[in-house]
Image (tube, rainbow, N blue to C red; front, side, top):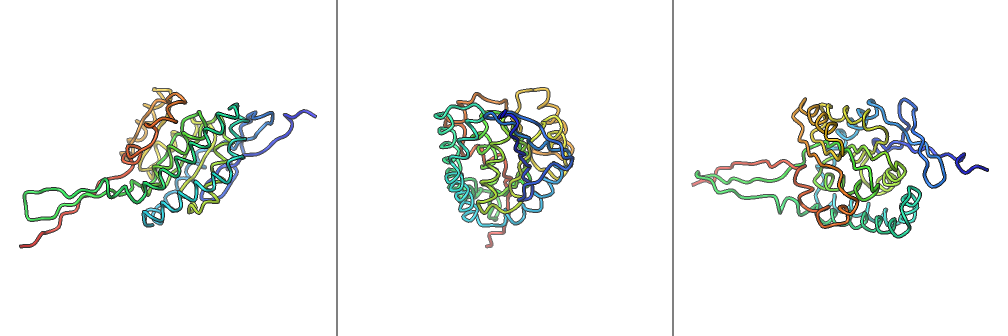
Length: 287
């Protein structure tokens, strides 16, 4: 029997549920000797994901930072419990056994890292400002809102979690368009999210064609920020221009080498800060 005849359908993850694309379209990709049918997200799927993210955002940012940290740490535990599944998915896409295990280890460590950051963001970024008047002047960070992420293509696991974890740690909700090279790993991550007490809609994962979905996310009026990881500068510029419709905050990067994601520059406060807004309060100091 031809192994390529064995098929599996990979679904989108929107609003805490695994759903087919509204068009019913799929993209065939060969992974590990099997033909996978990955859902091909449409513009409507992207809009549905943004709607789910917006609905989930007030509850997520309203939770205590400590509770958000607990939930992200639970995500790390679920990734640990599904270590074999994540590694097998990476090996099916062409990674060696050693490389797959290394990537899974790094992804779990990254989740633990950002779980620890949740209740420290405000302490680090808040300030009491000196002013030339009898007032207390205090600045503190607040989440930006709904963030759309065009994730790097490869490697499939570490960049995916490295881009959305700092965003949700800050109290935002996300819509992630995963890289098209290995949609199975994106779905495996979504299964970890679905079983990790992350509220429905906080993380939404789409698979499909960047050229179809990315412009919808860039121009959507209810998306507050855009995180672009693209090798094509012309495409990145076009999405940046589309984001001007509602003055989105845009963060642009060229896709780095795979080794970058395992280094010290691939995580930290610098990944959180672009997706918070600093709000300043003036209060009379009295006589």
